[in-house]
Each structure stands twice: as C-alpha cells, then as structure tokens.
Length: 247
Image (cartoon, rainbow, N blue to C red; front, side, top):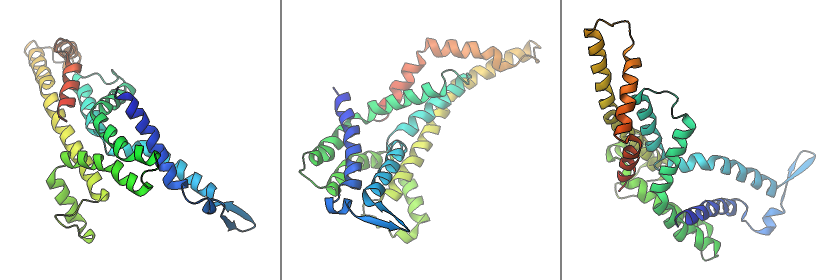
C-alpha cells in the first residue's frame, strides 16, 4: 500500500519542479530574448532549467534521506567480510536504495499529503507547497543531526548570523545532516568490523604457530568469515538493525 503513495510522490515532485519553473503566466512564456540576430523564447530557457534541475534531483534527494548511512554501512560490511566484488557495487547501492525507501516511506507520504496533493488540487500556491513538502524532511533531518556538527558549521560561517531559536537554513541543515550520517555510518561500520577482525587475528596466530608464515591469512580466514556470516544470517540481521535505528 505504501508503494502507490511513494510513486505518486515522485510524480508529484516532478510536477512541483515543473510548476516552479514553467508555471508562470502565459504572457511570460511568449516573451522573446534577443540574442544578436536571433531570438530565444523564455519557454525554451525554462525548459532547459527544468531539465537541469531534474538531472540533479536524484542527488539532492539522496542528501536529505538515510541513503548515505545505508550505503556506507553496507560497503564497510562487504569489506569486513573480505569479498571485494560480492555483492557488486550495483547490488549494494540497490539494497541501500530499497532500505531507504522502506525507512523514508512515512516521510514521503506526509510530504505528498501536505504539499504535493494540495498543489495538484490547486488549493495552495507553489511556494506554500514547497515549504509543506520540505517540512517532513526537515523534521527527519533535525531528528538525526548531531548538535555539535551544527555548532561547528554555524561557527565556521559567522556571516550568516544564525540565532539559536531560528530555523536552520538548508545551507546549514543539509551538510550537518550528511556529516552526522557519515559519522554514524563509520561508527556502526567499526562495530561490524570487529568480529571479522578477531577471526583474521585468530587465523593469523594459528598459521604463525604452525610455521605457515608464507600463507596469506586473508585467504584462509575468508571461508571462516563467510561461514560465520551465513550462519548468523548476517544480511537480514544488519538490514533489520539499520531500519530499527531510525525508530
């Protein structure tokens, strides 16, 4: 049931971007810009800007979701196991995307109900729709950002003159959220790495005691790490822990 509202949200965000770019008065669309001997319509410029924004939309969307945290933890997990290409990068990114979709579904639904749907029904204007659509993402980011990171960025840019009770601008909130998610991803990745490191150390000590110093410990420890990970149902356990961390 959640996939339909999320799909409608994706369509609604595209429509919202389109309306913000080309939703001006009809008279404005007929304007002409003189460029030397030729003329370029304002509608053509708006279409060019719209295509540029749509090309940047996936990257912008990843910045305000839990995708960075997911993909960092899964990448560190693959490196801890010791298999560099299994699963491949495309599969890691795909799994991170679907886990992000699962976690962010309530935020997407709220953004659709509060901002995009009223705009499509012509109940509010584009600016109000933009603010309402962004509000759930602001709440999500504020709940995950670390206060010390915000203080660091605010102190690094005193010219912005941000007051303590003022709503954080996106220029401060988004990088603070990204830095917090990256930091949290490396912290979880360190905890995931420890049991596999213990297996490597044990295998290296056994090989050293047997006088097999020329045998690479990583080659011998790989089957044991894979067996340990499979028996513990590692992928399901890690995915469940990542989802539960967003409560």
